[in-house]
Image (cartoon, rainbow, N blue to C red; front, side):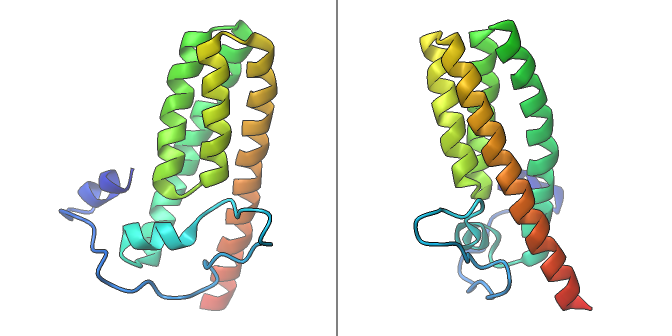
Length: 151
């Protein structure tokens, strides 16, 4: 996903030599609860470019919402193969943007789909949806904080 943005912006590769700027995007969660977004990792991938990070996360949000809607339909239909395919894709995208809890929830759902565990898929889908909603809330809060600091 990061490479997609760079291609879209006409850039060839990531610049990881720059030190990321500290800002409200830094992780600030209790030690026992991983933050929904690993901004340190995302900053390394983006070379510390905050605008690029925002673009990457916004694209992830758009695509993840579509994928979650498709996954829900496939779970309700009991279509394990399609759940596995969509969840695998979401897992990769979440990992690419540093949405680690979403990625981890997708891993568990994908495993239930591979096993053909229909009830397990329903439970794991609810967990995935919950983690995605936590991601959305966290990102929304941080985006509002960033906007108010820019004023």
